[in-house]
Amino acid sequence: MLTTIIYRSHILDNVPPQELEAMVAKANEINSRADVTGILLFNGKHFFQLLEGPEQKVRAIYEHICEDLRHYNVVELLRDYAPARRFGRTGMELFDLREHDREEVLQTVLDKGTTKYQLLYNDRALQFFRTFLEEREKENYFEIPPADSWSFVPDADTPSEPPLQPDEAAACHFAFQPIIDPLAQEIISCEALIRSPEGQSPEHYFAGLSGDEIYHADLQSKKVALAMAAKLGLREQSLSVNLLPMTLVKVPDAVDFLLQAIADNGFVPEQVVIEFTESEVISRLDEFTGAARQLKASGIGIAIDHFGAGFAGLLLLAQFQPDRIKINRELISDVHKSGPRQAIIQAIIQCCTTLEILISAVGVEKPEEWMWLEAAGISQFQGYLFAPPGFGAIPPVAWPEKREEL
Ligand SMILES: Cc1cc2nc3c(=O)[nH]c(=O)nc-3n(C[C@H](O)[C@H](O)[C@H](O)COP(=O)(O)O)c2cc1C
Image 1 (tube, helix red, strand yellow):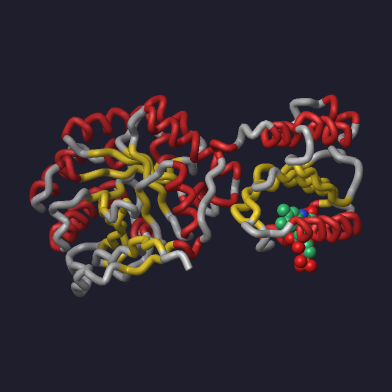
Image 2 (tube, protein in one colour; image 1 turned 90 degrees about the vertical axis):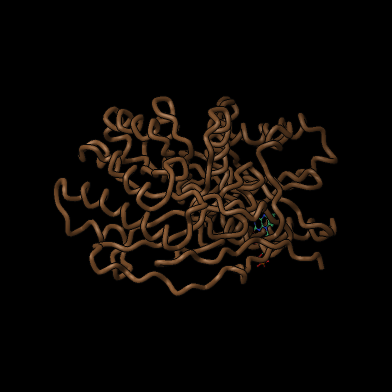
């Protein structure tokens, strides 16, 4: 299948111009043999390249290019399929924008296009060329330093208490994972994640239950979470717990039950945040918004978890605005390499900033993901990069430390 990939990257300092010429000559040969077209623009700092040809070949060449140490911050902007080539000639051609008039380059690029695509002026690939040539993409593109410019060392000052053992009377246990502001070195909240007493997943815990039993067990488990949080000394901290949205609807007086459990364990409602999963909220939105109002009226905060994973996305915020949203792991994963993920997250940030909704990024595993998200304006994070969930315990946080420049 005919595939087009467009990416953008940053040249490494000190790559001599002759090396670039040699690279283009070699690439020209490789591309020609593979029946791939490579149009490369260079503005002295950034590369912008279109690769077009048979899918497997384009993919293989692109993967190879991503590994090339002569450039970094490679961000894929477009991956598309088309019935015919946009550009007829295969091989590799470099346009150094410092030596050419930009309008001329655009015209030359357009002239290389097949007649059909020249006419289709709103073609996405050609629009990307125009945006790069007019330098309009700059505000959306963050330069992040190499992954090893920060180290992540678990905090040695965290007291290592033995973990809490499961209570024999309780059917569940909890793991605790902090939500942090890494640059301020501050713990924003601690999330209690339900587990079976043996440490198995929430699905395992709920698997043995049927019908409305699930909602009652869900609510009862919050008593265990709050009691464990109190024992772990989290009374001065914000505490996040998950709840199935239908628990609020199906169990009469669920809010009163929660308020009682909060008070019994020495917490106040304002320090508790209840997290609901986006997809579950959406399936019964009207009933949920009624119940959510009761929670808000009692002082308890509301967060939407896995935001962006379901089909509702930003539309959800038209009907219901939580205090916080947690961006789903699927969107966070390799965000530093993906133009579409970056665009979606930027839209979420803009929308939530306008609505004064706090944002946290969940499931952050790589330093580059964190660095890109910080550059985009997110300051609160949760993930293995900083701290894994601690079973019956608060794990030490690995705060990022800037490495000394060598
Ligand atoms: C900005 C940039 C664009 C490149 N474009 C291509 C290309 O279109 N085709 C290609 O075969 N190699 C391209 N390369 C070079 C490859 O990364 C790689 O060096 C080349 O395929 C030769 O492989 P080798 O170094 O393993 O021998 C590019 C490198 C850079 C930095």
